[in-house]
Amino acid sequence: MRHLTLALDIMGGDNGPHIILSAAFKALTEFPQLHLVLCGDEDVITSWLKQHPDLSPNRYIIVHCNQQVLMDDNPVSALRHKKDSSMACAIRHVKDGLADACVSAGNTGALLAIACSQLKTLAGVSRPALVSSLPTAKGRKVFLLDLGATIQCDAQTLLQNAVMGSVLAEQIAGVEKPRVAILNVGEEQIKGPAAIKQANALLTNSHQVNYIGYVEGDDIFNDIADVIVTDGFSGNIALKSCEGLVKLLIEQIKRDAQRNLLSKIMAKLARPLLRRLYLRVNPDQYNGASLIGLRGIVVKSHGNASDEAFLYAIREAVQEANRQVPTKIKDKIENLLMERS
Image (cartoon, rainbow, N blue to C red; front, top):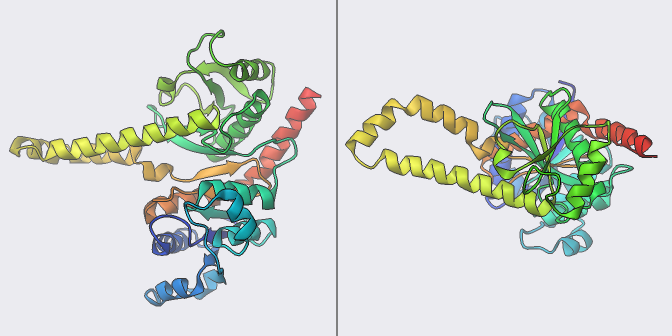
């Protein structure tokens, strides 16, 4: 792995800086050539570091920030009035070429606003998109976008998202000619709102993606597509519904396993199988939504992420930086513009 520098928003998230710092130094152990820029309250960071004297100071620097973007901050207000926040600092390091990517668990709206303001979108991209991967029945990943960056998408934005999602599937999952689909209320051509139908026509006539048509919500996990495109409203609801269902199943299994003596014995016998199942569907390993379409790499972690979950977001940033995803998206979007000119 080439030398990489990540800027981390230490003050973002619901669970406190210690969660992010713990994940950060696990990442330093996992990636020997990784360096970190720790953006946040210097007193808080150094206090935590004093409890971990074995960590090498040559692998990180601390950048003190006087402000913090709170979860209930208005995005526009955060953009205008919190220019010295840990979030703005992390993104600014990417803008200035001092970091290859940044990771934050902070306010999603503020992250989007600050990232768009500082990094700008790639030429030919009207809006960035939030994208994350989910497991499928055959063990592969499916990339779902948009997850909330743009609530209502027109046909052109859906087309751009399809191209960007396809690049991500190629570079991160190693899929050759990823199958791209649009999430709709049915597979029939006559179904769906106008923007969906228009995007369907655009994708059908484009040579930039391997478009396979419409899929429904129950197809997300069936390995029918490698990339599923939708608007931010539907995508966010789909993602949160999936996460909620996984949590429900895990809790239900735990309760049933303790119901009586027979259940406890059966649960003990089935523990290896249940553990493998848990590892496959555990939402932590799919933490890290990428804000793609920008002239830099920004990865958004869940606000309530554990240190293990935040570590997955760091891994996502490392992968995208190593594969130079923004450059690959830029090239593909240029091809799309030439095709449509």
